[in-house]
Image (cartoon, rainbow, N blue to C red; front, side, top):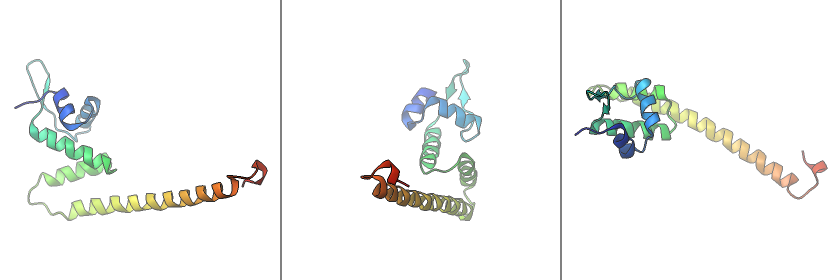
Length: 123
């Protein structure tokens, strides 16, 4: 069973333009085409695209996703490389959380000092 790009978009929740972009950066393989040059996709393409979408929602960059996909194509590959990619991403997320906590602390301090006073008293 083959799907059109619109059907793939509906099945995965990924916009058509994004699917084309993923093809251009090789996250999605080049699809089969009809004699009229229309793209045709399989259920495996739906699974791959759903994985890519989920990875993007988790904040993984396209390069990291490409690395993970390349590793998973080898059934005998070690999970160590994927673990390393995930650990690196976790470290990035933890740094962002620390930055956001510092930002929150500063905003709370600002509101505590300026919320009810006069502009001249705010620092």
